[in-house]
Amino acid sequence: MKRLKGMRVIMGIFQKIKNMFSEQKKDNIDKETGEIKSDVQEAKNKAQSLKTYSQQEGQEQIKTARTKKQKKQQEKDYENNQENSNTKNETEASDVSIYEKGLEKSRTGFVSRLSALTNKYKIANDDYFDELEEILIMADIGVKTVTSFIERLKKRIKNEKIDTPEVLREIIIDELFIIYVNEDVLVNKINFNPNGPTVVLFVGVNGVGKTTTIAKLAKKYKDEGKKILLVGADTFRAGAVAQLNDWSKKIGVSFFGKQEATDPASVVYDALDKAKQEDYDLVLIDTAGRLQNKINLMKELEKINKVIANQIENGPHETLLVIDSTTGQNGISQAKSFKEITNITGIVLTKLDGTAKGGIVLAIKEEVNIPVKFIGFGESAKDLQPFDIEKYIYGLFKDF
Image 1 (cartoon, rainbow, N blue to C red):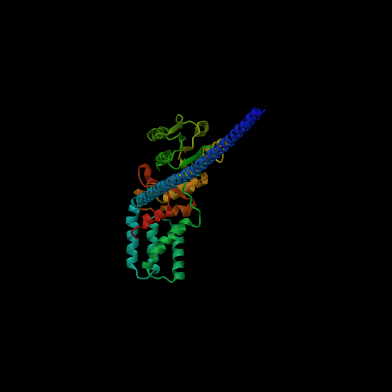
Image 2: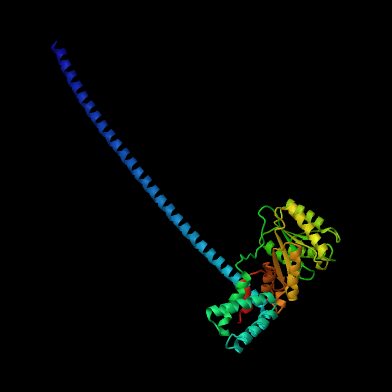
């Protein structure tokens, strides 16, 4: 019994020792587990910190990159704007130079006489105005325009109490500008059709440079990216159709024409069919200029206009009258006659470099109230310019 009891005591001691080790082991495990958890949490925190830092750094890098890109784009835009501005200024200067050179003949005689008149008189009396009137009429400004101008000039002199010709220099230029503008909105561009081909009809007597003008405008708009079709509807003048066809080949645009003596309206009809099917932007139509047979010409143009209106919405969009400026007052008579025949929307004045009477520009606007849209100074394509009254006045009075 005693022995059994001793064994139980020993077993109890062993159990206590075992429990003690188990508790210690558990404590150690818990401690180690706690440490591991702490290490894991710390690692997570570091990872999160690194991630946050990485994101912040990445955002900063993106922001910096964007800023650099924006700055680079701004610098590029500035350079482009400067380049465009320089190009525009160079073009502007080139255009002014063309006006100066083209009006040299007119300016040489006209301005020298005006300057001599200014030096001759100390007071703007009746004799001064008589001579001024004569000089202006000789420059082909036209009797009606000159009469109106002199009246305006005298009235302004009276109101502003001016009596010396020297002071009148700027007023003369100013009043001629006002007479031309006449509070109108001046448009020197083609009225383009937003819904299909734009149709421009060209009229004018033979020999004024009509075919050459069509070719120059075709070149201008081709260079601007337009798809051009030239139409030879002057089927009565020998060689007119072939001449326009030759121009189309030289400048690289399309042409439509038929044999001579064909009905012009039928040529126009088929040409417009082609223009619509092949998506042409601009159709330039040459017509006959037999003004001596006004009735037949009127009927022909009426028929052509009717065909165009039926084929193309709001067509023709422009009817341009081409006038040789060297013909002077005869050119104004042509404008009046063609205005009776058809609806003229604008005038093209050619060969202005070959005349000493550049005043026709002012007279033609006053006489027929049709704006000059283009003006020709020479043979090359760039010598045909959109008309600018300010450049014209400057070119005409540059040395005054």
